[in-house]
Amino acid sequence: MILLNMKIPLFAPVHRGMFWLFFFLLACSSPYVAINEQRIAVEIADEPNEWQRGLQNRTFLAQDTGMLFVFPEPKEVTFWMKDTLIPLDMLFIDENGVIQFIRHDVKPCKADPCQTYAHQNIKYVLELPGTYAELKGFKTGDKLQILW
Image 1 (cartoon, one colour):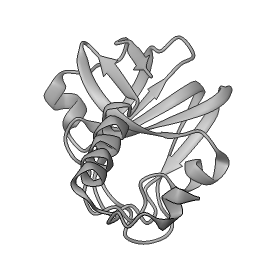
Image 2: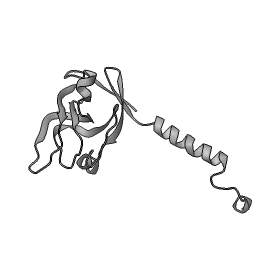
Image 3: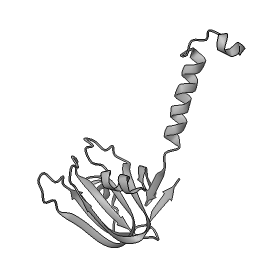
Image 4: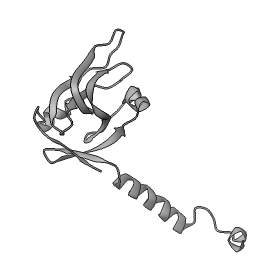
């Protein structure tokens, strides 16, 4: 009850410090993946609504960042670039973390029908900025490590 009567400004220096510390720790706890020792910060898409939305309507994707789609079990997956505004690399990865196929620098779809990209026995798909996989030398057979 005494604390309720205290007049401490919400953004007193100690509160501001804690605020920035919280966001720093949050940023440091982002999941990462690694391919050939190249670390990539990822957003995780592991629910159907996240799979459907993906990176749609994004105008920018920073280098060394991407989105990792995680499926409950290996299956045939189909991706497209509808409502995606930036070129992407798509890495199709099996349950052992091995890259099975790479679609390089896939351009946005500007009109229906959009081309689809399907592959079987896929557990993960990693979307990266267009040309990133080639720039970093990623290839079929490379292994993805998930660093939570």
